[in-house]
Length: 450
Ligand code: HEC
Ligand code: HEC
Ligand code: HEC
Ligand code: HEC
Ligand code: HEC
Ligand code: HEC
Ligand code: HEC
Ligand code: HEC
Ligand code: HEC
Image (tube, rainbow, N blue to C red; front, side):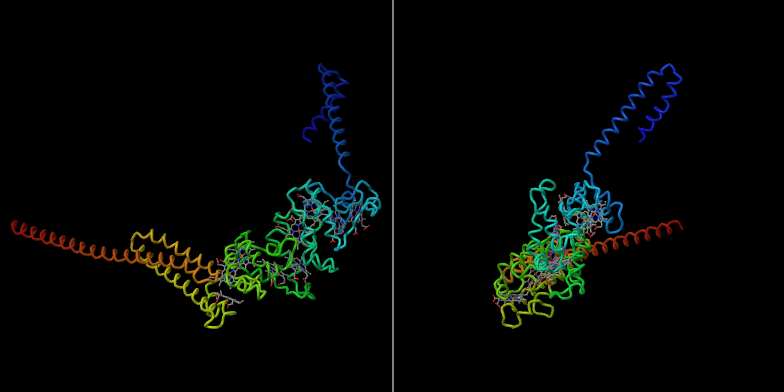
């Protein structure tokens, strides 16, 4: 604009210049003609480009509408499809070159108005299941959403005519669909649970189904939700990490360990070779769930182990002669022993440090005993006392060594303190002698003066 204005000003002056010729009148007229043709050329090319761009009568007309008919146009401004040049006609079909609504929204031209819920997976799948088409836009995007969805409880029930289950648009929206890693997308990690909860946490909506509506509340109280929401730890799972993005089904007894094992590989491996593996399989109970549950997983503690009230073992191992009962008690005792040893060593080393003794090395080494404790809490998933002992024993050894180092430091300190007291006494004694001697000299001098 700023550049165009002076051009027109020049040209407006030009006729006047011609009427009253000046010295450079001709040159001026030539300059003006050049500028004028330049302006015409620019206008011609930009018009040419505009007419080459596809006409979009859908947007043109719907922009003039109100409410429900206008909203899609507004929402599409933030749509990932729009950012790739896809528009109304790419989803709804019809003919966007027609201004006449009957011709534009002609079902004979494939126009689909508002698709029925049953048809939505195929509606979205017309592109998203088409590998050739998707390759052109986003080669890295998966093309299995519709197929996976078909295997889910949602998909199967939809096919059977249940219109209350989630379809593609329940989770992604219809207009204004965002890329899944956009923090405003309803399926972004921090938003997924809220999206699922719109149905699953509503007792009213889920009335008539055989399942509870407490998954969201329970999940929100779990260690996982705390890690995700309070520490923004995106590696902690939300609904779709355990249920899949599109194949939403309860993981099922056989695959629970795989679900948890995706992230907790060590516990999962240990469990698989433990005596519980075959026992739990035979009882058809979910591996990790039996002790940790699925949605309200709480921070584990040593109290879960053993034979006391809060133990998870005693729900099955009740008899005193039962090997499981005995082992549970022993494991708890071993862990307790290591904790006591670590605490005692820590205390004595702190005391030595406060007294000014150099104990940084044994303090550092005590970390190895702490690591052993952490390791032991993982190894309990082998449900074998030998395995746990394998790390507890060296841990105890380190803790005890540290304790001896602390004791040595403290006795050295007390030895040094005694030495200090003796030398202090000696210095005071000398000072007193000097003082007395001075007094003696002083008084003999005074006597001499008299
Ligand atoms: C000249 C205006 C005009 C044009 C052009 C137009 N529409 Fe519409 N559209 C309307 C009006 C008015 C309605 C509501 C009346 C109706 O349902 O027929 C509507 C309704 C719709 C609906 C909702 C139908 C339903 O079943 O609820 C969809 C979807 C739609 N238009 C998409 C499109 C698409 C896609 C295009 C371009 C191919 C398009 N429109 C072109 C005016 C227009
Ligand atoms: C990504 C595919 C997609 C695109 C692009 C798209 N729509 Fe839709 N549209 C849908 C779906 C799916 C529905 C059905 C929504 C439902 O059932 O609630 C729908 C419904 C509608 C409706 C019915 C009223 C409503 O909101 O439910 C209108 C009107 C409409 N679309 C117009 C448009 C217009 C105009 C554009 C372009 C600005 C557009 N749509 C772009 C998928 C799309
Ligand atoms: C129950 C909710 C839900 C339903 C139903 C659903 N999606 Fe998704 N969708 C998700 C989640 C969750 C993600 C993954 C988010 C992430 O990766 O963090 C996702 C991811 C996607 C992606 C990105 C690529 C990918 O596969 O990760 C596309 C494309 C997609 N969905 C399309 C669809 C289509 C098409 C349908 C219908 C056939 C559908 N979705 C049904 C929840 C859903
Ligand atoms: C005309 C073809 C077409 C239709 C129909 C279509 N999509 Fe898409 N969709 C695409 C393309 C192409 C992309 C990739 C755009 C990009 O890379 O941002 C995409 C991207 C997406 C994404 C974002 C994936 C990501 O990168 O995170 C989601 C979610 C999605 N579509 C869901 C839907 C849903 C739900 C429907 C049905 C209501 C639908 N799409 C209908 C072509 C289509
Ligand atoms: C539009 C509502 C709606 C949304 C949104 C929704 N669901 Fe569902 N879901 C249902 C309904 C209804 C059922 C059928 C209940 C049944 O199985 O009896 C169901 C079933 C399920 C089941 C199978 C339960 C069973 O044991 O039969 C799982 C798992 C599930 N949904 C997970 C999810 C997850 C995870 C999300 C979010 C990513 C989600 N759902 C989003 C409505 C919804
Ligand atoms: C840490 C993994 C995990 C997370 C996170 C998770 N689930 Fe589950 N969910 C499971 C497992 C495992 C089962 C199967 C329990 C069984 O087989 O007894 C299950 C079962 C379900 C069921 C079937 C009914 C029931 O209560 O048993 C629904 C519905 C469900 N989950 C929805 C959700 C929703 C919604 C979220 C998010 C708010 C969610 N889940 C988060 C692991 C998880
Ligand atoms: C997507 C990865 C992922 C999945 C799947 C997963 N978890 Fe976790 N889990 C985590 C993360 C991350 C933490 C937080 C670790 C922390 O506190 O630093 C965690 C924490 C835990 C804790 C507490 C650990 C502690 O030291 O406080 C337990 C117990 C747990 N998960 C059990 C399970 C069970 C049982 C399942 C299956 C039903 C499961 N997890 C599925 C990632 C996962
Ligand atoms: C028979 C009961 C039982 C089963 C089955 C079980 N756990 Fe544990 N789990 C415990 C106990 C008890 C603790 C607490 C140990 C402690 O703190 O002393 C624990 C602690 C944990 C911890 C935190 C401590 C750590 O770092 O190991 C995680 C994570 C964990 N379990 C995951 C799992 C997973 C994943 C599975 C399934 C493969 C599983 N558990 C199966 C009883 C069980
Ligand atoms: C859901 C029930 C259940 C829970 C909970 C459970 N166990 Fe077991 N456990 C079994 C069954 C069943 C067996 C195999 C039969 C048997 O030997 O008693 C078994 C076997 C064992 C064995 C091997 C016994 C042998 O004779 O070799 C040990 C050790 C054991 N459990 C320890 C534990 C500990 C420790 C806990 C708590 C952290 C625990 N169990 C929790 C059911 C359970």
